[in-house]
Image (cartoon, rainbow, N blue to C red; front, top):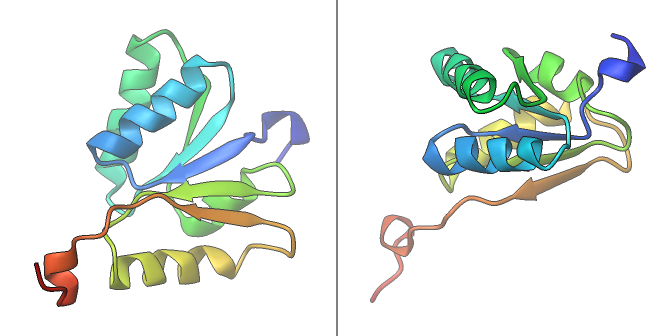
Length: 118
């Protein structure tokens, strides 16, 4: 991949919050790569990026392609459901990451699901 095509940041987890954050980052002029396990969410985000101003969003369809699409040191945001999905996502990306790369876990925790009491 050409270095000029690398994104400044990546975002994985393209539900409503993830899509909106990715498009907001792109709207500010930062090229961003996006990834979601459900590939239709990637397509949906790319469609929105085109409609909302041909924003600098690059869709990736595998953990490997996603991580390798980012400038070093890599910064990626994950917005996935708390618990096992976070662990699985980190494991999928870690295989391709290097020392100095950063993962920002921006997902929400639901205390009721983790056994917390009110």
